[in-house]
Image 1 (cartoon, one colour):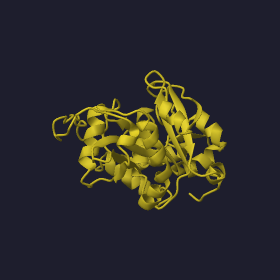
Image 2 (image 1 turned 90 degrees about the horizontal axis):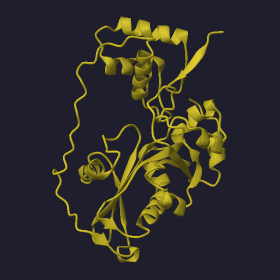
Image 3 (image 1 turned 90 degrees about the vertical axis):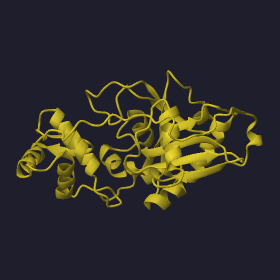
Image 4 (image 1 turned 60 degrees about the vertical axis):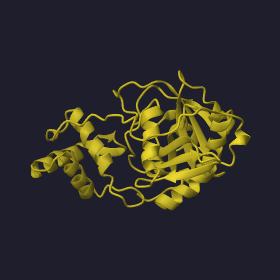
Length: 293
């Protein structure tokens, strides 16, 4: 029996790796991005909505390259350094300090690339969120929140769930194979920013509760498939997770200090508390159902 390893969520045998080596030799004129697209096509590597998983394939090939199992062509050029344009979009920083009831009702706006509000959304996260923002990757949905006087208050970004994390996976009770098939039914809250000049007690939990109640429908409208569980990772040294606790998110445990994909040897990351929020009362049953790949 040929030994297999798991790389980027894919069972990979030595025959698969040899296929990739031959594939690279047969396409000497293709750069890394083009190679990943063509290999994904060759393997028909797609998500459940039929979209080609070329980004996952590119990461897959890069990991093989770093492990010395394949040799990718040289990068065409160094990745450009991103610069923060903190003066590009003028906006008010007038302090807002009041009771929550004084700014209700809130307006919660879905943000998509190309929308009029998209540059402002990107600017706020780039300028004011401690993790920065480098643009959307894969399936994602953003929200901009305004008060009753149309003043921006907050930004939220949701996207792909972590590939694996023991506390969450134990909480669900699924196997590796089921997780691989159903992971897109979970969405991660990657960013949550209350603008720094906004000081309104209980605002964060109010917004989080409102968005948690509507994101399921918004996700179906955008991607035509449901989601059943939200997750987030809260850095323990920075935050207490109060707003998640106040809106009934469930603490599953802590991370082990690895990066998102959970690979051995990855760069160490800060320890984070893992919170989840079910969007369906039978979320476990939904997440454990067998689905075709």
